[in-house]
Image 1: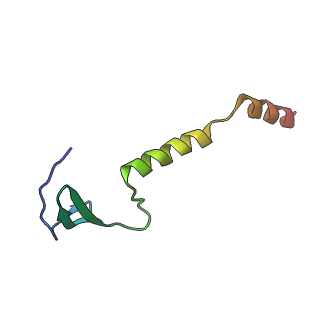
Image 2: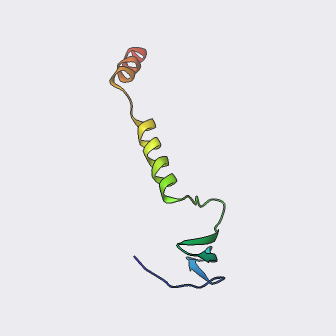
Length: 74
């Protein structure tokens, strides 16, 4: 993991097209502005993990569903 120090209104670049700017710093909170192409999803980590969990749950197929599909294919 790379740890960088930045001040208010300073930025970092990720690749050629993702820019993260420090907008504000107050006590223990940092506000960021993220500029990224529309095709790059940007989420808070807790939301990202929730999306991943929901995707895994949606991808699971029950044994009953498999048996129903087998019956339809006969």
